[in-house]
Each structure stands twice: as C-alpha cells, then as structure tokens.
Picture 1: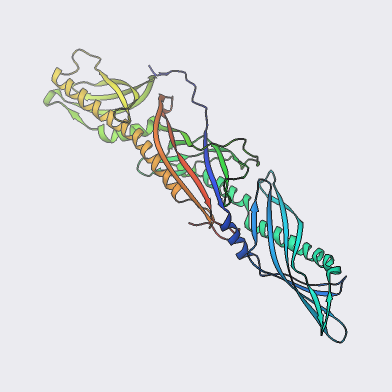
Picture 2: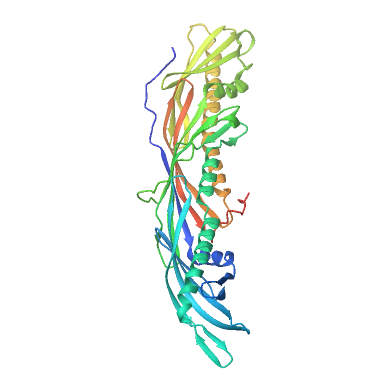
Amino acid sequence: MEYYNPFEVEKEPSMFFIDVELDLPKVEKALNKNIPDTLFNSAVSSADFDVKAYKAGEIKVDISQSAIDFKIPLSLKISKSLGLGKVSADGEIEMDFRSEYSISPDWDISTTTDLLHHNWIKKPVLKAGFIKIPIEGVADIIIGQMQKQLVQTIDNQIDTNLDLKKMIASVWGEMKKPIQASKEFNTWVLLRPADINLLPLVKTSSDTLKTQLQILMSPSVVISSNGGQLSYEKELPKFSWADSSNQKLEMNIISFVPFEEAEKIAKMNLLGETFGTGKNQVKVEGFNLFGQGNNLVVETELSGAYNGKVFGKGEPKYDPARDSVILDDLKIDLKTSNILMKGVGLIFKKKIKSMIQASVEEQINHNITEMKTIIQNQLDAPGLPNGINLDAKLGTVRILNVYLTPDGIKTLINFDGHARLLVDGLPDRQTPPKE
C-alpha cells in the first residue's frame, strides 16, 4: 500500500550575505577620471565678469552612511571688459560640497548637494597695467554662480556612476533564472529569491567602506525535462535597509528527484534483465517506485518461472561515513513459497538490490555534487559591471534530512561559505556587464 508520513517541510529560508567593500582611493580615481577638467565656463552677468574654472588637483571624496563629501580644488581665470580692453585675474580656491543621498523604494539614488564652505588659496586680483584691483567684493557673486553649475555636475556624476537600481535589478533577474546543473540528469537549480536588503555604509578604515547585500531565498534543485521553462515571477522587492550584519554565507537547498525520473534510470539498468538458468529464469518486465511512510518501495514485475510482482523496501538516509545518501537496508520480499529455486532467488535479490540502490543513490548524490559545482560556477562568473568583482567560495556541505513525498524523494542540504563584492572604483551605467 502506498502512503506517506505527514511532515513539515523546513520553512527556514536561506540568507545569502554578500559583503561589499568600496576602496575609497579607487572611487576617487574613477570620479576624477570622469569629471571634466573644465568645470565652469560662463559669464557672470550680474558682475560683468567672464569666469573659467579648472580642476587644480585631485578631487577628494569622503563617503558616510548618508552623505558624500567632495573637496574640489579649482584654478580660476577671470576677465572683465573695460571698454578699451580686458583685464584679467587668476585665483585658486577650494570648495567643499556635501551630497546627501537617499534611496527610494524602487532603488533609485537621489541626491541633494550643497556648498558647505570655500577657502581662497589665492585671491584673484585684476591687473590693468600697473594697477591692481582686488575683486573680493564680487567673489561671492562668482562663487554663487559657480555653485549652481558645480552642484549640477556632481549630481550628474553620482547619477551616472551609481546606478544602484540597474545593478540590483540585474542581480535579481539573474537569480530568478533556472540554472541547468546537469544535462544528463535534467537537473536544474532554482534560487527563488524572496527579499533583498542593503546594510548602511560603515567606514572601517580611512580607505575602506563596507556594506552588505542580504538576499533571502529558498533555493531548490529540480529534475525536469523542460527545466528551461521553469519560471519564478517574484518581482524586485522595495528597497529597505538591513538591520544587522552577518559574516556567513549560508544556504539551505532542497534537492528533488521525482519518482518517474528515478524510474527512468533504473529501467535503463533493469528492464529485460534475466536471472537464473533454464526453466528457472525470470525476466524484469516492469518497474515502479513509490513511498510507504518514509520507506522507498520498489515494485518489480517479473515473467518466466514466476509471473507477478515482487517488492523491495528501504529508507533513504544520510550516511556520514560515505558522505552520501544511501538506501538503508533495502529488503527484497518474495511473496511466494515456490517463486524460484533458493539459489536463483538469492541471486535475484542481490542483483536487483544493488541496481536499485545504485540508480537511486546515484541521482540523489549526483544532484548534490552538481549543485555545489553549478553554484560555485555562478559565483565565479557573475554578470557584474566593470569595476565590481565577486570573491565567493562555497565551503562545507551537510545533508540535513531525507524524506519522501507523493511525487518523489526530497533531500535538504546546507551549504556554507563566504562571499564578498569588491568595488574598485565606480561602475559606469554605460559600461556593459562582463560576460
């Protein structure tokens, strides 16, 4: 009789923690490369001056949990028409800006940038022949005009280089796709992400900033002939900050082997097999798998010296010594006193037991091995923008439980390891991801 024990599938999802490290000097280098040398070139009409401002050195950047500070050194070229000609002045100034940023529910970064203060390194003085005319009185007008354009330049650079929504949406989309782990066994990995959060930035040293991407998911392994059509429709969740950090990458994955797929492999090995000699031969004509409690029942149909069915029963368990799932103590029950001569019966029992154990164990354990390989491969070659590198390694594998369902054999597996995203500079939103 076919029946199954009631059970509660482990509902504890997996938290996938990815540490994100930003190298501040490399962020500065990328920003300096992207910001043009000429930052202002315009007439200040209210003061009747023409002003050009150039970068006088490297822009310094400091990033905190809610703001980005910029120290911008500038060289100024100032000129003024006096009717008969032009007079000019040079100056040097440092301007400190702060961009306070926020992340909207749909993962867009918005900034509000203001000038904190300025410091004249070299005050501009107009020269008309031997006459020097200080222009400190109109400096505030010039700075006010420059401030508007520089604020717009900074906001544009943040918008261009920090496209958080595009990066997160790309990661989410990739995680939703089925991953083929084995063509031979039609094995597919579904990560099934459920939520994704970001930890606020923390400065761990003068040069390093850290955050953490936290992804909640319920991964599973499925054997399916049309696995490429498997779909997972969960949309990207709204942005929210994570409450606390964790240093460990850990996943619980359910590996599923449908009875029909296990039967296919077993049938390849068993159908048409004969046992015994002469009149005492039997031939395997059919094969079926189902559950009885948490025991796997093997139903084999025979013809020849015995026409009928025989049954084998064993419980799939994890064997720590072999580090694999085995069919524990598979027993073959020959339900007749004259089914076969004793010797043929013993040969049949031994042969069919080894074949059934091998085919079922092979699929379960192949799933686990392939699962680890495919997940590591996905971690080794993520489609991330230039400037972002993922360093991740899966560690130990533990089988937590094996149980039967009306559809097949499920194995709960735990992976641990570590993962780190290294941000070397700023990924440009125009730069295509690495293949």
